[in-house]
Amino acid sequence: MVRLLTNTLFALSFSMFAVACGSSEKATTNNNAPTVEMRPDGEAIIGTWSDGTTTLTLGADKKYSWEMMRPCGAPPCPTTTSGGTWVLRSGKLYLDPNEGSDEVIKYNLDQTTRSLGISSSSKGKSWTLTGR
Image (tube, rainbow, N blue to C red):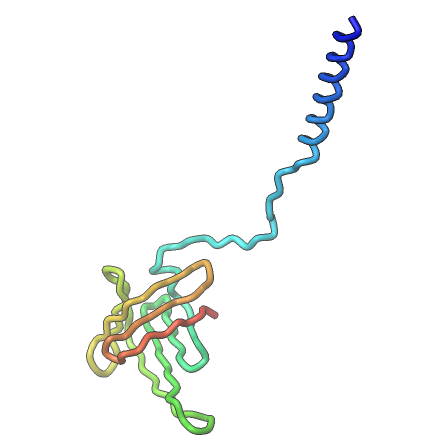
């Protein structure tokens, strides 16, 4: 009888310990974390992208402006500006400037960090631009 009573008390205290420990563990969720609504590239790429020396603006009206500051000895440095129309097709950004020939740009859009990586074979350069 004493053994039965001891085992019962042991089981009861163990189960109370397990319940107490289990209830203190709460699932934590970070409700303050920013959420990013993923949109199609054709919508998400619209805006102004810059790295400080290069600024690319892609408008919802499918017009673009591209301003590049050339390196120089002392500011203000000269800038080159071009503009025209743009379209996304087959995973590439096609720029049709008002003057000159079309340019095909490889791009990588990261909507989470609002960064746009572009690579121009005609200019022989790559840029990582941040959305404003």
